[in-house]
Image (cartoon, rainbow, N blue to C red; front, side):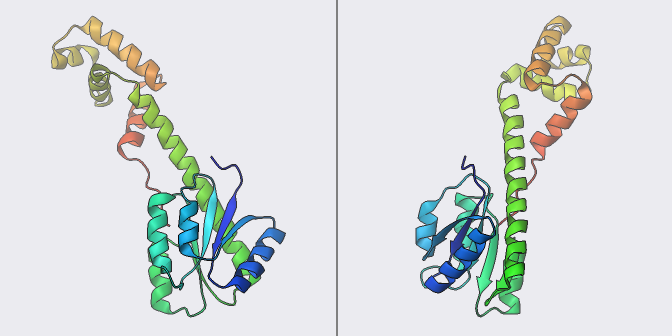
Length: 209
């Protein structure tokens, strides 16, 4: 994973790249600049903590086109849009599709820094949630088919004797499967198991970019 938090700045105006890149670096951000959306997309995937500062109107691809590609290639990467010709409909659409902010050019320096900070905070939370979910998924993947069956029935509140009847085996065998299942899932109570299963079945959605 890329260790540094970074800002990807995409704008086809060289003067904007220079000015905003200089401002962001002076404010302590690590910045990568791109003069075209295709050159930025070629940089992906990116699995670290970062955000995209994106010009809405560029010759090759629109900001919405880039936002859609980023949702696939770097789903944890939030977007802040920049536009020199913004309108209410475009701004509303951008926010509805998950943008952190929509800033008009020339951009206010304070508003820009604040928007980038919020975007990086969202990215950090996105990455944390994804890593947490991956950990839950890894635990569940350790289970055998029979252990998964036992897991499901325990989570539904059945006792060992009832589970044995459901699966056509002995209570002693169920106790062995249950102990192994609980150990692999790293839980020590039925309540903890039910909570873990709820996380697996209702994985939190990462906000769109």
